[in-house]
Length: 128
Image 1 (cartoon, rainbow, N blue to C red):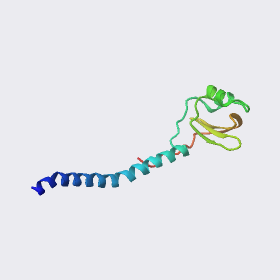
Image 2 (cartoon, rainbow, N blue to C red):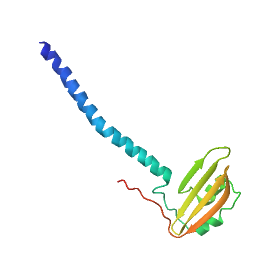
Image 3 (cartoon, helix red, strand yellow):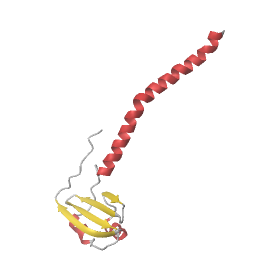
């Protein structure tokens, strides 16, 4: 009789071992892909190209303009980065089919605007 009681426990242990083995192979790969996608997002890989023209967007933005006004005038940036310190600095990139507009903000106000005309060079992900 003791061997009959041990059978359900044995099946449970085998099932648990299989689950642990599958998790040991799947979990690290899932985590690595998750981190890779986050790193790609930080680097601006696959940023969207906005409708409209770069020159038209440039006429709507001037140094000294508040960040909220820029978003109202041009829209959400294709890609943005922010750093914090004694003052906050942001770089907003707007990708258009005919060029790229880069807006540098300091403490929420436009400090500098640069333009690069020609098709934007947006890196694409190498992972499927």
